[in-house]
Image 1 (cartoon, each protein chain N blue to C red):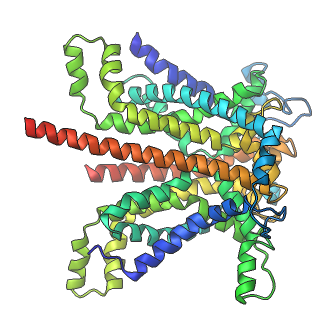
Image 2 (image 1 turned 90 degrees about the vertical axis):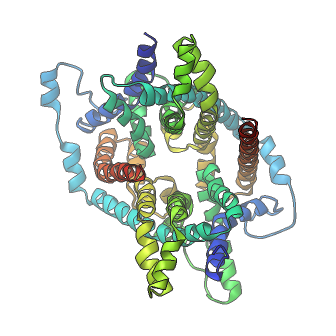
Image 3 (image 1 turned 90 degrees about the horizontal axis):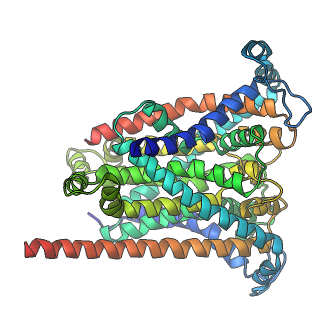
Length: 291
Length: 272
């Protein structure tokens, strides 16, 4: 009896507040827009036969016909892939430096990486608005140093979105790479160097392959949330920045077209299933290797 | 071996400068006298004063705090139950679905979670307000709690529980007297994680909040859309300060407990 309650309570909670809502999204993505509140025609009200007859893929056809959506998916993918690569380039040297730092510094360095993760995401994105704007600190600094003569336009462009993603997701990339590098046996690199590798060769042929698992985990941890990102493109991006999270938001709150917003969500989910499954598999493989 | 090369020193310095300079600039300019956020006009704390007069922000902060306390407490209870079921529950019908539902919200884009919950609340005719935000936050943060707690449950020695059962404890007593004290640190950090996730959330709260309840992130977001303001800088500084004090205290306490535990173990080993 106790066991039944223990299982049933969280189970029912998740069914009701996680699974059922998805079924509803899926259902609404297949219904027509109507001007009632809620603004969609219920498709499941009267019997299963009418339900099947009423279903249509109109909203999905609409998504393929309007190239706004295609472009938004493609540009989200592009932004997510590129910013994951940038984050890796920034994170690797930091993780490497941490793994090579004296033993007694490492807990402090770890805490310094984790601390921003606890501070508000919104505030960390907001901090960049003051830095990247036309009269912001970056432009003031560059003008003062004489590197440029006219202020650069960075805020409200895609460049600002890249900076925002790299900045906010950096800890997610540093931590798994650091964990992998920390376990790495230093004598392997010495052996490679003894056997005639240059330092760079030893790094490329020994260190990188041995930290592969950390790199893969970090890339997934950045790529997956970056793809559906909403806050960063809407605060740092411009009107030409197309990201699917932002499109979904505007479709829902501004155009109040719920069926299309739901269809956008369903497709985003389908795109995300591939990296999520790959990520789970990679984590499992890693766990097995450790045993 | 452990001497840092110039390359490592440079990458660490630049890396941590990149992580902390933006927040540092934000904090410094919250004490700026000028309304223009990029021109320094002398030290002043007037924006903090104005913040305390701003009732809209104070109301939102109160709502946010209430939501965070309620949802993180609920999430901790449900998440701990879920973790216990996953690690100790054995086989039961629909176990795969259950573990899938625990892990999926961790990687789900917030816009999708928010949209789906809103459609559910409208579907069942629930008025949007504090209750709906609490339900939404509990659902996604219980999954984080359950991951934290189950990793602790996996590493602890099960024979302790069995010993308690052999010595006549009921299953519930064994949990309360043996299991719970051992997993308590994980439960507490799960609660803290759920609490911060709830404080921080903008997207899901925007979907599930009604006109009767606005949270602080929603308020900040709508203010920030219009541009940088010194008042928001002051608010951000307060929030950063609270988090910094909290995290540093927590890590010092953990470190002290760890040291004490090691000393006790050493003493026990010597005595034995």
